[in-house]
Image (cartoon, rainbow, N blue to C red; front, side):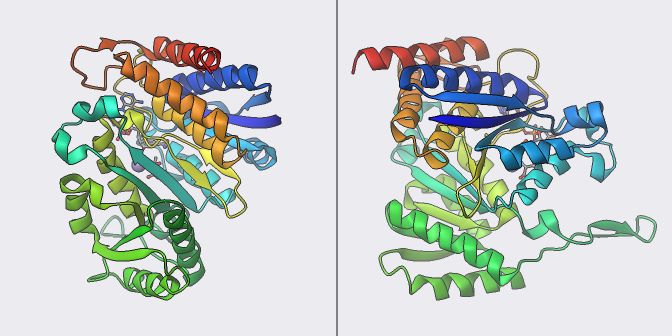
Length: 361
Ligand code: NAD
Ligand code: IPM
Ligand code: MN
């Protein structure tokens, strides 16, 4: 299979972890006789510094023409005081919107060897396996107008959704639940927000078409609590953009580190951008110690969702599992009696297992 993959390293550890994904995909290409063609483009702060905008047109065009996209991370203190149109994050929001990547799938499943790496009690975390379906192109992130008024005396951010925007993410969530354990938790703030009331109504309307899915509604504050007190009670959790952003970082605690969480941002026709849940981690950038596994696991999601390459995706996930089972881990994971390795060593280990697992088949 020949595929064209656009790489958007971005900023901070983004460029470090994207290298890992490329190495891993090259190993997969070799093992399974595929040809992956990579093209690297600018986004975020790196793009602001080079061409004066966080999302150059050339990047959008390349992404539109690609079979899939891998994104590292954007942002950093260097650009924090820039005007909002020149913020690296604008580039990320821009590419999500330009490609209509409305569904952000964030699977959270602890690797068995990492159960004790979570600060939560092992018996609480054991068996947790959930999917956050986050709406990605609406809500507060895309409110108009978002602005300061009256000489800084007031400020406006708007939370708006169309019925269609809510319907398509709810549909996606029901479909995901059907493919999993048939349980859907819809998270909102329907006791306060009008957008949440409509959201809840649409979930109730859609439910009739999915009689095999059990539906539950939770208010976001209670959901935040339940996510870490009773994570095994969740299968698929669907929510709007901002709530999904916050809850997914919280849920990463179940896996032992934010550096473990992959995600897929997809369009109705399956086109996808694959990105770790974490950011550019300025506090550790440039030190070669970032955990590349969220990015590596995101590339497995790409193989599965965009290319239908299930065996290849499984191989990456198995390789990661083997490396962790041997006790190797990056510094962000708190594992007893393990061996701390850096980003490139971790990548090398995953690549080695990708090759050696084929010999043992
Ligand atoms: P962050 O996710 O970058 O970091 C939070 C903490 O987790 C830090 O202590 C960091 O060192 C650690 N961490 C994150 N990923 C790690 C990894 N792979 N390995 C080891 N440790 C890891 O969040 P932040 O510090 O709040 O944000 C930093 C910048 O990143 C901001 O500019 C923010 O806007 C941006 N950001 C970008 C994305 C994205 O591009 N998708 C996502 C989140 C934040
Ligand atoms: C994420 C990030 C982004 C978001 C930021 C960088 C705009 O936190 O992908 O989770 O909030 O969507
Ligand atoms: Mn986030």
